[in-house]
Image 1 (cartoon, rainbow, N blue to C red):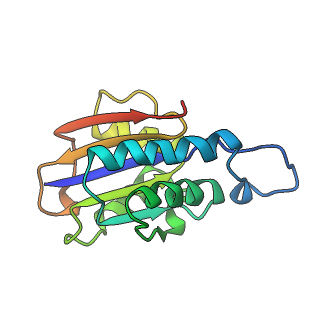
Image 2 (cartoon, rainbow, N blue to C red; image 1 turned 120 degrees about the vertical axis):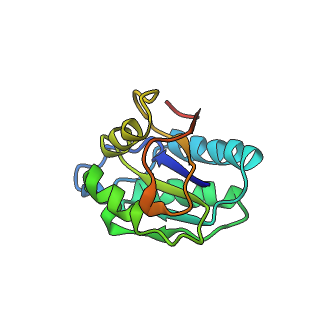
Length: 157
């Protein structure tokens, strides 16, 4: 059984037009909501084996704030999670080491919502600072398809 969490970054700021998209920070609300979501996830689910984040500051900071709730689990940055399409995200997932049973992937919309819809018809939209959990009855990440169980946790919305 494989478990995948798709987590959209917390609320980010558009206040400084000099910043590139990758440099946009979290707002005060985002810095408040991410630890709350992390607490909810940590009280309900076991510690992930791997936490992968887009290199964009808002996604990486969200991942780090949530990781603290899991005892400071290290976050691995994967550039393919920024600006990629659903096919690229699936490639990242299919290439995961099968030793990992529980993976958290931190990224952006519209790609995360599109990927979530691919796993389950129940998914409509993944708002900011939300996590969708998918369980797959497979032994290898290469074989994931439709999810057998879906749960959504919202914090910021």
